Image 1 (cartoon, rainbow, N blue to C red):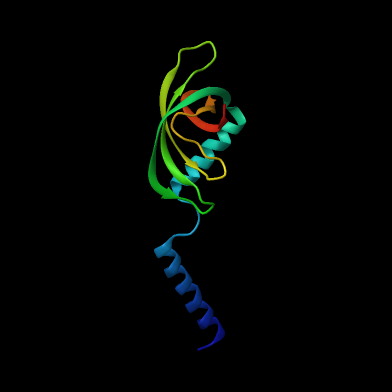
Image 2 (cartoon, rainbow, N blue to C red):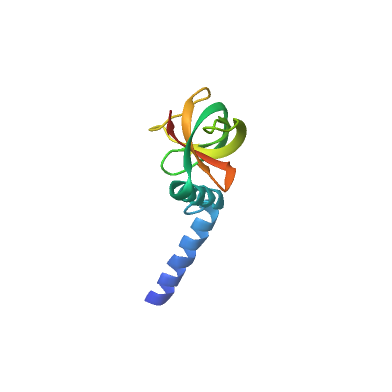
Length: 119
């Protein structure tokens, strides 16, 4: 078996292993990253309250765990409203049910929100 054959076999083995395990971000994680990027560019800081947090069981490589988060968003000069969002929460920046937080809200879609810090 020549060098090229051995390299081809190694590449096929690596591809088989990664197809079983998965490499890189999931589509859901990519969607969250794109949402965060849009909110960083266009989002408006708005006070909110965490009404509930439910873990989904999903985790990522940096150690975050995904949660479905129910929030009451209280924009200045407008009526408060409820929204549900998913977000990864990290041990270095923990949030919990009952916390008052600052979310970024996309002006073109007030239901697109993400927690960006404690109030």
